Every structure is written in C-alpha cells, then in structure tokens.
Image (cartoon, rainbow over the protein chains, first blue to last red):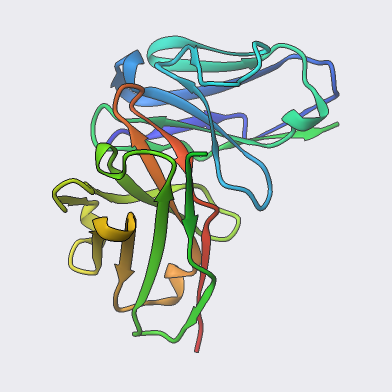
Length: 107
Length: 119
C-alpha cells in the first residue's frame, strides 16, 4: 500500500497569503493518479485537482497542483476567506489511499 | 443536477449491522462506479471499496472484507453499503462518492451519513 504523508499538519496564514501544501508518497505515483480535495467542516470533500495539475470544473485558478514521482504540491496563490479548510491528497496507482490532510487555518 | 443523496443518521449497538443508502440522480446510473469512504471523528478519509452499478460487481478493501456488502438497485438508481459486526471504531461519517474514471477521482459526493456505534 502506498502511504501518502502530507505536511505540514497545520498551516496558519492570513488572507491574501500564499499557501504551499506538500504530499509525499512512499513510492512513485503516476501524476495521472494524484488528486487533491478540499473539505470544510460538516461538508463532504470537494474535488479540486486531478492528474496532479488539472483543475476540476469550477475551481478558481488560484489553485494549482504540481509535482511528479513521490513529491506533489498544492499551491493556493492568494488565500481567500473561503479557502480555510482541510486539504487531502489521494492516489490511485496502487489501490487507493488518502493522505492524512493539511489544515489551513486563519492566522 | 448531478447528485448523490444519502439516508439519515443511525445509532447502533455493538454487534449490530447498518445499511446506508445513496440515491443517484442527474446522470446515467450505470456509467459510473460508486465508492464508499468513511471518516471517523476528527480523522482523515478511509476508502472502503466500490460497487459497479452496471453489473453489481464489487471490490472491497481487505480490511472490510467479510464485514461489508455493497449492492445496487438499478430500478431506483440507489446503491447500498451494509456493514456488519459493528464496533465502536466504526463510528464515523460514511460517504458515497462517484468515481470518474477519466480523472481517476471522486467528482461527486453524497452529503454523508453519521453512524454512531454505542452501547
């Protein structure tokens, strides 16, 4: 099973700042199978990025994904108030696993 | 619009079973696998497996094999997840989610069903 480790666990930032979230895999994952979700309290997750770097329908362009192999990054260029949430990465190369999540909180 | 609507919250005793439903609408039901993902209180996401609404085929995570059954009823475009032998660690919110094979991702999620296991 591929283990996804997300860091940091919590990111404290102010609106307007840039957020950089990391997702590291225990073995190589094809970019095709790397996905990012956003989850707000009391809500289901929402698909943000698929294929490591493609934005899902309706996702603002301040969200971007990058990376390959074992290291992937989700970047939020300028945080809006509605972006404070928990973010999960997911891989589907070998079975399906999620990372433990990164909470982006207001500083 | 495309949506998955789940059944309401459940409270069960240890050893009991729970069956959660997930009704699909707004798309061709048989074109997409439906998966189940659970989230324990304050924890991350855990994938449980999927059901293929077209032929009823299933794939369960090994951890849940023997305890989980995923089925579908095409006449009412609904999938079900039944979990047996409940223990306190099964207390969680259970989500159904549509798998989009082209994106290898869950693009539509149900609203979640809270299951509490308590004596």
